[in-house]
Amino acid sequence: MDSDTIAAVATPAGAGGIGVVKISGPRAIPIALPLLHPSRELSRLRSHRLYYGSVIDPETEKYIDEVLLTVMRAPHTYTREDVVEIQAHGSRCGLRAILELVLKQGARLAEPGEFTRRAFLNGRIDLSQAEAVIEVVNAQTAEGLELAARQLKGHLFEVVEEVRGPIETMLVEVEAAIDFPEDVEDIICPEVFAQRMTQDVIRSLEELLEHYDEGHVYREGVAVIIIGRPNVGKSSLMNRLLQKERSIVTAVPGTTRDFIEEVVNIEGVPIRLIDTAGLHDTDNALEAAGIGFTRERLDEAGLVLFMVDCSMPLSDEDLQIYNMVRNRKTILVINKIDLGDYSIVRRIIEQLEGLSWVEISALYNRGLEKLKAAVFREVTDQRGPADLCSIVPNLRHKVAIDKALRASRDAVEGFRTGRPAELLAVDLKEALDALGEIIGVTATEEILDQVFSRFCIGK
Ligand code: GDP
Image 1: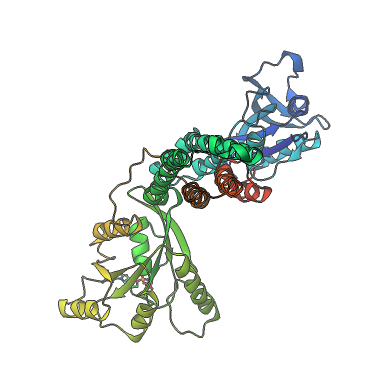
Image 2: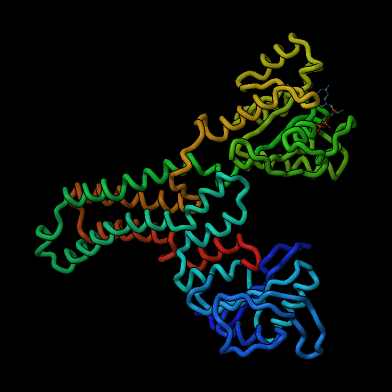
């Protein structure tokens, strides 16, 4: 267990009604108390109560802010350590001044995610719950929040434990068979073991993977890239979808030089919309940099919106872009339908064969609902609204579940073909360890760092 005391501003940067400085560790209370006026005796402070006062620099006696202070004694706290929270006004300077005083008193600045990491290391939550904290904080849609909140309550942990149980039991028995080879036949009944593995382990894992397929986009969102030559109306579409003037719309080609990425909620799926600089030859270095970047972003995107302008026939540039996107998951967005005549639209559809298309007018707000429906269908793989009552693993969990599933299937195969107990134990252990990575019991430092690096300071 860490023995130092950590502190950080727990509320976002910027001005707000209130802001919180959080302190956790064995010296949290003695560090905070000398800052509070009127002064109070440590032994008199009751846990989980609010105390009103002011923070004053004990050295200079400078008044900093009016505050409410909460003392929470271990173990009934977020980290299971002593925790003090100082609620001050949400002024950046004021909070920084309080934090500096706290650090001067002997606390150390917390690393990103360190409060939650301590909650995990001290056994209050498992790794999947720790991960859920950051997902709850970052949730972009009500649906994403619901899934993360369910994980925070420990539902995924329960399912994983339920699956680990039978594997553990079987492993104990298989290990007994290794120790007492003469009794192997009494200890291992291959048919029963194979059946138990299939019923109690493999089915549950397959179900979790199904839930991943159905629901992960609600949690993780999808990157959707809008691509097309300059002036086809990409920024206009972006603005329509976001319902605000964020991209600069102009009639001069190539003005969207930077990538603009914003999240829009389409039926509960957080869609990260990326507007791009046009893919075209250019002498402008800035624009060229943007174009190289476009190709990279294309590779990351879950869906491409390839936009063309139907007020004129397709150009070579349109066709070049078509060649880049035709083998990706793409919707052809035929824009400026207010100006286009039917013969041009038909010709475009013929030339850009193989793509499903939607006709819109970004300027006059036509066809946008159809486009959103098409985007939703594509990113959810044509499924209707997901059953959000299920437990939906995230990508890290999915990788571990895949591993566990492979090992479990190998074990079943091993039982059926009478593989030696030593090899069966290897498969069972592998499945167990993979599942342990999800809840953290077998997670390496590397995995922990990967999980907690997504946090910011103060969580
Ligand atoms: P981008 O370069 O692809 O981002 O294109 P912009 O969004 O900047 O649009 C270029 C020009 O086309 C602007 O003058 C827009 O007002 C105009 N425009 C965009 N969409 C439409 C549309 O649906 N109909 C018409 N008539 N003009 C449009």
